[in-house]
Amino acid sequence: MNGERQLPCPRERFYRRERRSVPRVREFVRVALAEWGVGEPADAVLLCVSELATNALRHGVPPGRGFQLYVWPPAGGVLRLEVHDSGDGWPRVRTGAGPADEGGRGLLLVEALADKWGVGERVPGKVVWCEFAV
Image (cartoon, rainbow, N blue to C red):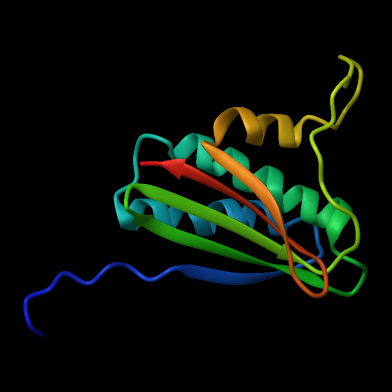
């Protein structure tokens, strides 16, 4: 080697359309954050990735399919999460969820906790992403 410091590689993993995928996603990201030395926004990152994975499972993954998670290491002070699914539909922040509603706040949390978030196209489906300053 020539003495240059090599940046960590992004991590990726495929998850099946099943309820136990969400805790597996959290653990996968928790381990990556620990290995990369990400401390301060770790709780927010884990909450946001849980919400994105839950949304993919509930709204974005057709039966018999799954979703792909990418976790990009902090480069230039920014950590990025991406959830790729093959479903139709486009996520949007839902306003007006009442106290008795059991859902509808996931993207509100992502919007509040992440520094940036958005949705991009892929064929088929979409990519929902969020970024955090670290």
